[in-house]
Length: 361
Image (cartoon, rainbow, N blue to C red):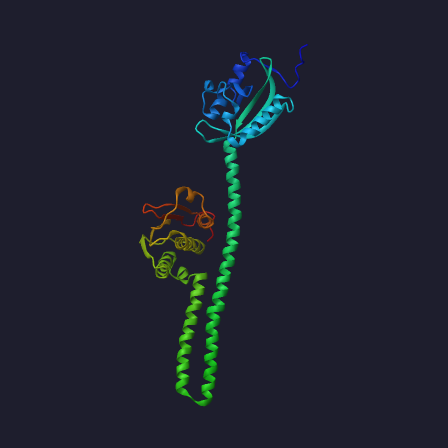
């Protein structure tokens, strides 16, 4: 007695005109699998994998999926062929002919192929959609990490500031207090020579305190940035950096500084400051060269070191410091690129327009 055909099954005849006419023209990939091998694919399905239709005739299902997806795909095939799950939709990772990964959304059902259970379905290439989703997730994770990094840096800066105030200013003010006490004692005995010696020391210590206050204030907000402008402040910072680090530092300026907002100047200053910090921490460099080109509509800055360099793929996977620099540049309407330098070190290129739309004054 013939077994009745379940409602979920339908006979498939590859020679039917509607099959060839409609399916061949379909924008979705269409396939028929029997005994785990492809018995029919349309041109769209073959193109998803980079094969010709004839190349896929008789190809095993596992030949098209990634190793980590193979078992799952075969289990879903078994469920449909056995009738356990007549129809199913899922997403899987496949392997293109050239080796790259292709993401497909599969919608398949059990059918009859020449009187035997088979699998027929449609496939949609969602590789671009998955790539956008993954990029969005990466961006969200980077923003989360950046927020944590900013908080960490802020706390470190506060700790440094508190330490400077306590250790440097506190120590100096304590010394001043002690000297004033000594003066009071000597004044009682009218020891003028000793008093003059103490006041000389006191004046010297007072000047050191003033210098320390200026240094701490400059680290929070450089005075030269407001009084002399960005380019002069950068030159001043580079000179001080060379003296502290022992590196050979050169600064070359072409053109003049365009009119920049205070916010823009501050962000650009911090970008270069962070870049110099990265040189000290990671580059193992001996030289740093900075070239600034000022124009009426903005400026360009290239900073190059001769350190160990940065690989192109590493530059794309920017660390938190570089992400912060890029965000600062974007905030003022500019752009920042990091790439391997011709000298073998790292090249940082900053491009900033004058007062872009939406930038803070």
